Image: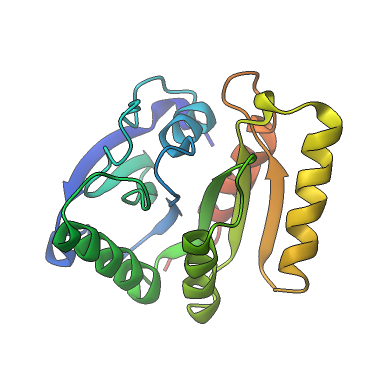
Length: 198
């Protein structure tokens, strides 16, 4: 699958604006400022595809990117630190939950977490939403370049231990800066997108 041809299709503020629920999609969701946009850009090898910013919460709508015909990456609004009014935050939460629960073409969710602060309360809530939707989740422990190798391995093991036997969750170290784990993450996204299309 040639991710380098991935391109932006549209942004959607309301479910009525989503693309038709056909084909295969892999969504990315995560707390603001954990490197979600950088992860999308690294996996697709497309600098600037997803907009990065030092200001958390820049992704304020659901953004659809086409990898190839009927196969898409979907960038969901970041949650957490975003300096936005409560009614906007509630709208994001409702949109994300509705998307995860109702999107039939969704094959899996990539969930970046800052490796220095994984499994926040909001991350756990996201995992619970995915579990209720019977959706596979791949956790990227981002900013692995900020930790020494031994500490990074211990963090991966600790997150795995905390999650226990929750089915459908996989975990890996990831860094868009030094390229840690990009190939593995890209391979999983490709596998999900290659699943049978309805």
